[in-house]
Amino acid sequence: MTAPVQIYTTDHCGYCVRAKMLLTKRNIAFDEIDVSTDDEKRAWLVKATGQRTVPQIFIHGTPIGGASELHELDRSGELARRLAVPQSA
Image (cartoon, rainbow, N blue to C red; front, side, top):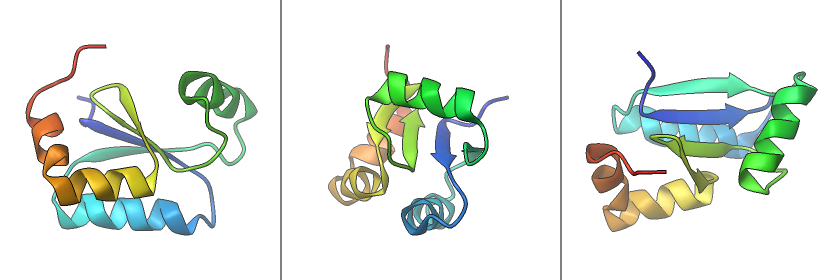
């Protein structure tokens, strides 16, 4: 079973660590996909999100941005809402 959150990361990424810490603190299951050495997956990620930075975070398959966006969703209460109800693509 796939977790509701997928987080694409690279080695030595402080923002990736921050995002994973928040998810862990909130007891939110996530799948981590390391794109450090996977050029094909990294290219797909750029195409899917339009962003070259990591982390890139998906909730129920919908991209939400990076660590800053995740923290803002958490502060606003929107993160819990999005996790409770799968968004249609």
